[in-house]
Image (tube, rainbow, N blue to C red):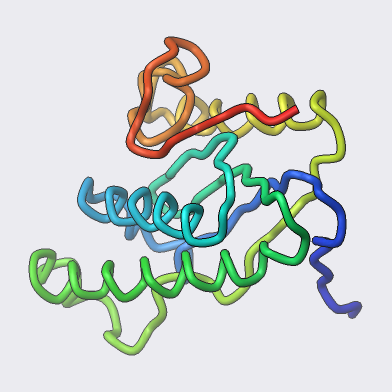
Amino acid sequence: MSARKIYDSELHAHFITFSCFHRRRLLDHEHAKTIVQARLTAELETHTGTCIGYVLMPDHVHAIVWFPETDRLSAFMKQWKQRSSVEIKELLRTFLTQYAENVDATDPVWQRKYYAFNLYSADKMRQKLTYMHANPVRAGLAKRPSDWPWSSARYYELQEEGRVPVKWIE
């Protein structure tokens, strides 16, 4: 089996996906999703990145991010996942105790790896943005992408600013 490679030596945007450990629905709770959004915003600021779009699902996350310098993605992802994991585990321990009883406390919040796809054109970026914004509709969580508050769809469809600053990059 070949090793997974992350290509971050070009100034492409990256379509990233990562999942909760064992595809658990750890992001069912509103506070857990708020943690992931806040950490996304903070890590983008720390790593001078831009969020082009995102969607939070109950068991996984999609985002399109861009950095003005190469070799930023790995450190960004490590920090986003690590810091949100710590906060979600604290949420489980302190507020979601009933749910936490069914989860081994030593289990990680996130699957170890993430999937990254380089977006080398604006057309490919629009395609991935449409795909990820449609996720809540396909899952039966919303009738329209803009009905799902945990994504950037409202920014693109209704020009509404959300919890995560979003900006289109050409």
